[in-house]
Image (cartoon, rainbow, N blue to C red):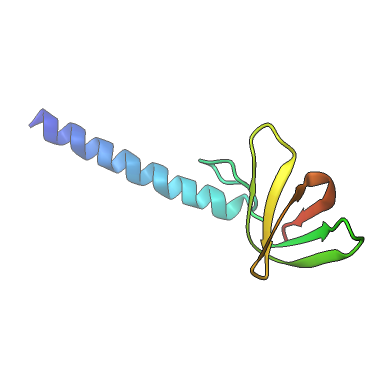
Length: 90
């Protein structure tokens, strides 16, 4: 009997924490509670030839202990430094 009660309490706590995490993400904009990743809608990338790429970000990823960032815009993936990219959250 005690085992069922403990399992029930754990399930309820997991559900409450999940709801809180979703609420936090939806009300605090760019920052997620659990994984601390950022979301960006648009990016502007300066290329070595002087041209500029701007568009809707479909995905992006950075690398630990590095200034390298990978941004995908309109199906093309760009690997660059944070010096050359501006990530924008509308």
